[in-house]
Length: 186
Image (cartoon, rainbow, N blue to C red; front, side, top):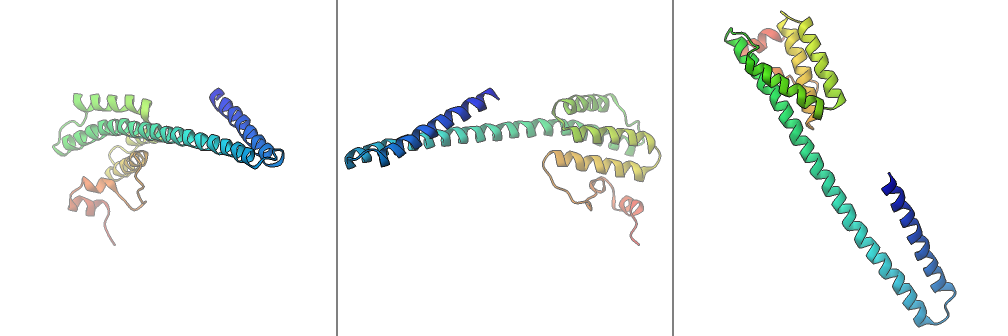
């Protein structure tokens, strides 16, 4: 904040000086060679200032892009923990075993830690909704898959993807028969 105020004041003073020099060179100096010299100095200062500002702006944009990429990588790691746990649970349930193994609990713990550090407020709220809805929808496979679909789409949104309302990510996990059973076409 203080840095922005300093830059604004400095730029204002520089602009005032350059306008004053230009005004003085045009209206108060009679000798043509002196006018050209003063306006040349103004042009050199403007060129130098423009070069410095261009480099600073480019460096700032580069840092912002690097930070954005770093943030995206961290979010991808967090989402990977969820996917690892999710697919492990899905595989275990499909094989009629207990879905919550030590591995899945560790992955979910890592996901929650990462979510607290790197997740947006919206994603955290959607996860809490998802977890609450899992408890409410126990035994209703269609509802569980629907809630999982909503949360997975929110995670993809966090990673920068734009999914339509028609996309059902959970159908990727299901066999053709299971897809037909859960969403019969009339």
